[in-house]
Image (cartoon, rainbow, N blue to C red):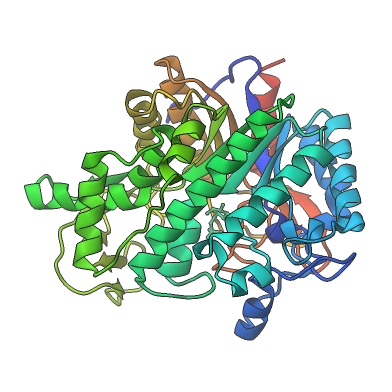
Length: 469
Ligand code: BG6
């Protein structure tokens, strides 16, 4: 393996978090419920409290970030700390918390990059239809405006995190509330409505002439035909349209191109689904498409696709081995294991080439997307902790991150403007669908005591940070 030896001068070298996954304190200081609180309780699998107790431990975690060479941190604001019901009077305790958090980070030289929405929809609005109800867009714009006015210390904003994970988690895969499976109409409508919400917030931000930057975050899932038959290639194109292209077109072209729509319509027709675009929607997207200051790209894995004309469903071949799961989407195709590609313990393909291909694609196909930050990339791993202060050996994670950073720097050398990389995640936190044993952090969290321990990946992260000095 060719190890990354140095980072470019001025590179943003950060760690990512999300409010609901780290803060805990879900019932204190006037916080309102999100769509997850009752859902997680009913499931009884794990609790969002105290998570990594970042609500109280943020000074320590920011201190660790600084000590280990990070110059940036991704956080999200919990909408329900600011507006417990999603609208109405602001909750001053929540506002005060974020002022303290931002100040602590800025004083430490760890620049905050702040998202407004990271899967944590207020419960009241969720019950009212969530993104499928266009009122939600209005409330989101009001909340964003409040934050822009209230937090001038934040210079780097993101509107929504991973629109596709939300839309597919909620309505296709069914592992996010409200747990719908293959409800294609809701999924595509949620994508469109979230894009509108993003665009309206960007247009608003620009009209406020503030001293800062704004963009959104997409997780991109490159798809490759498992073999090069015309059928498999077409299935891969359909998957790509649904997972990536519809959202990228909406964000950076401000239109869904005829090629994209013909693929999307093929999927909609096969599933008796439809998409409503109202008058004026496309003008809003168009206006915003040239106003994004940057793009936050999350990348975890690529998928391999085979043509398929059976029913939709999650299929497992029963061996329980890595690479043994597949996912079938009627009218689209089937995600299948690729025996040549290694996977993580959670069956995620380890494929850094996908990240390189994506970056090149963004430059080629979406010229309005100028500056890119990798806002999440990392490896879920079962770190082994022996109860002592000994540095925890997570070498597979180092290999993973190293190969992905190498892919980023290669694309950068070839002219793609990538300005930074945020590892997912800063400290261990909970994983939405997998609870507390799927760890991603540079810093180990003993969830029983809330003590932090150093992993080898944190030391490696620091060594690379030092190359910028
Ligand atoms: C992204 C999210 O989808 O991937 C994070 O923005 C999430 O919130 C991360 O935790 C890893 O996914 P998972 O399911 O392994 O936790």
